[in-house]
Amino acid sequence: MNDTPTIGKTLKALLYLAPALLIIGTFNIYPIIKSFLMSFYTDYDYFKDIVNERGLSNYSYIFQDPEFWLSMKNTMIFVIGVVPISIILSLGIAVLLNQKIKFRGFFRTVYFIPFVTSVVAVSIVWRWIFHTQYGLLNHFLGFFGVSPIKWLSDPQMAMPALIILAVWKGLGYNIIIFLAGLQNINQQYYLAAKIDGASSWQRFKNITVPLLSSTTFFISIISIINSFKVFDEVFALFGGQPGPANSAQTVVYYIFNKFYGEWDFGVASAAAYALFIVIFILTLVQLYVGKRKVNY
Amino acid sequence: MQREALSKGFVYTLLIIGGLLMILPFVWMISTSLKAPNEVMIMPPKWIPDIFHWDNYVTAWTMAPFARYTLNSLVVVIASTIGELITTILAAYAFSRINFYGRDIAFAVLLGTMMVPGEVLLIPNFVTLANLGWIDQYEALIIPWLASIFSIFLLRQFFLSIPKELSFAAKIDGCSDFRFLWSIMVPLAKPALITIALLKAIGSWNAFLWPLIVTSSENMRTLPVGLTSFSTDAGTMYELLMAASTMIILPMIILYIILQKYIIEGVARAGIKG
Image 1 (cartoon, one colour):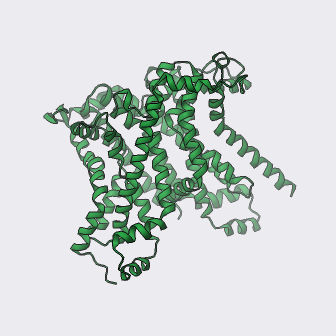
Image 2 (cartoon, rainbow over the protein chains, first blue to last red):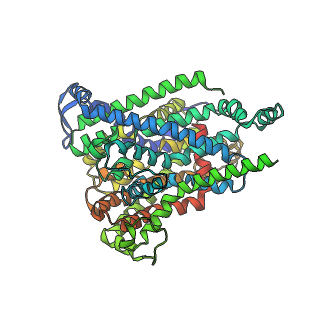
Image 3 (cartoon, rainbow over the protein chains, first blue to last red):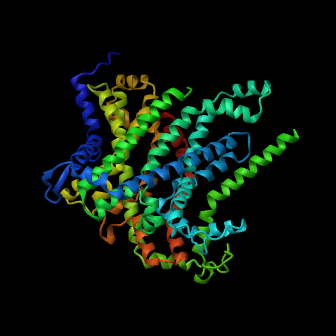
């Protein structure tokens, strides 16, 4: 069969692609460019889409805005809090689930449940669990002699509360990906190691971890990027506030505030692009480190 | 042998404790949603209420226009899922079965744009919709979500795994491209399509930031947006808040438990390919 591109085929393909391209072009590709341009609009009438003035002042504004740096710092703390804990826990659970155990499917189902639920609704449930006086968490911690913690009203505790919620919510997804990765490891490695008398910890350290590194790499990228975009949890957990004394103000919350609270589209676009660049750089760093460290 | 039994016991204990931590919030949510107001704020907490107050659900449902929120959510979920399936099938077919000029570049560009966080698109999309006069309309909630690069990618991979000989045979039999796609490719790709539809439906039902921004009137709110405004009104009436949360959470849990095979396999496949 001769299968080379022709004008006829291209026209036919365009017909098939038209609906998707119309939507993606309008709502995915155009806004990437438009957002970049908007970040330089310093005087803008969005109703009439008229730009009166362009300049760099949106960027200089956010880089001098302590609130922007606070939101960057909070987001970093959130990322550093969530990603390692979530990866270690989910890897551990995935390894346990990968053994010859009964009810494996049942456990897998249970761990994945939080992932399919509405972030907003579960955040409201957790708001109740974090309740200082009558919350379930403080009640349990009380068994260990911990005095009631003001999870949602103490600026020191708002971020830990957010991290707990995010780890709980995202664990199931990571477990599924880790399980899929584990099933790709040839069982014969384990058998050979067993014959050589390797302990289960040695097998984990010397077979599972290196052979799973591409999966771990993938999960860390996805987790970092998703954690950088945290918003719904913050909004719902603290009732439409970015935490007590802005202690849970994240980058997306900052963008949301500038855009929807202050209607300053230029500054919001500049902040959105700053977020994009951070995510982009992280992806590149991860790709670079990943290429060198990952054993395929 | 004994050591093995011991470690098996250890594995089960850990898994059960972890599993309990996963579902306890939901058990607590449902338990609270059935309590009398004076049973909610007590220490130690009571897990099973004396009388099951199903009327909390009625109270919550009527205290805010939850019927309207549910209707809006259903309209948005159904319309955007069906729409996305159609655009995805057509586009994935072109990318997997038609060799056209610029195909690989176009596909690479699409994949590249997936790296851009949705937050970057938020503001220009809002302006576009405002200019179209669609803010606070169903159009704003549905139309931007009628196509997904991720779904096109997923389905294209599936289509590529269907042998090409099949389409040659169909062509010889005089079957048109379009008929071949709908009567042969689509039925074969049913598992992938169910996965795409389910992930879309769950995502759409749970979506928050976008509906929050493009709706302004109470009548256009979807369930998650309605819930946050209800949570301001209900304040500390946790039995009502938990009843409302249950109404949003439970349908997705049930959907997931019935069709989990497609969701878990889809997530795992997408994860490995990515």
